Length: 172
Length: 136
Image 1 (cartoon, rainbow over the protein chains, first blue to last red):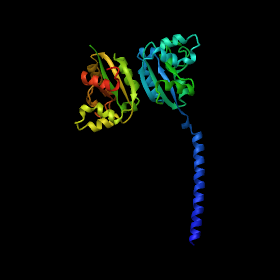
Image 2: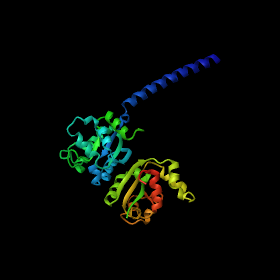
Image 3: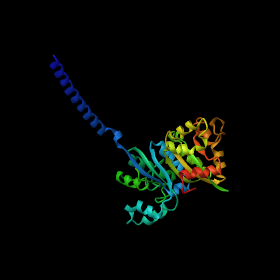
Image 4: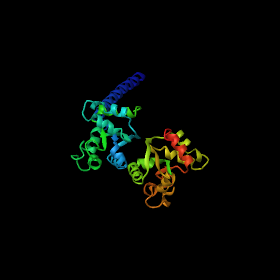
């Protein structure tokens, strides 16, 4: 009788662990396809022209009301060195010097934004690089002046987002 | 006289997505934002910040409320900034605050009154020094 009870117990435990493993596998598969897994972070600047024009608050308001979580926010003055490092990928381009001079010409607001597909979502909210061709309602259409003075910056890929946000928030 | 004051956008106002609105009003009302950072205060930082109130009955609630979520700390500059910022915030109790003031617009109650501002030039200096030592 005792043996039968032990045997039944053993079978029960084996069954339980099979169910457990199966649940774990299902859970793992669910997580892999779960859209919440694509929560990502991007790096943004409110550029000197928008800060000087007193549009920082309005831009932050748009960020808050478009579902971005502001993980970090800091007003800073970039040095020429910091701007050169930040735009290092463009250093062979003809506009590099102008870009660096402009970005270090006055304070900026540096931001780390979090949302599902944040990199693309922030690029969509900013609109086209050139404010004159940007869609209505986008930040660049609302607050940009020209292709250099275009109110905001946003990372162009997940990899660059990480590099950029770590330059200014190295604990992330 | 050009002066600096210290301001906080409190956790409930940040959580209610009023950060942008409040900054926009600050910008429109002639304050220069010379320092600004979003932070999560620790209990220790909050206790140090409110140390002048540590004998008051509301000290515990004050500390708990300010660490309930991230805040925006700011250094604002303007002519007569301390008084100008206090006028712009309105009465401590949002119910008694004048229409158009920040606390009337964004405050919920005396404990959740949207913003903090230094009450004197001595305290402004102490508060600025705690969060922006290079601006004090």
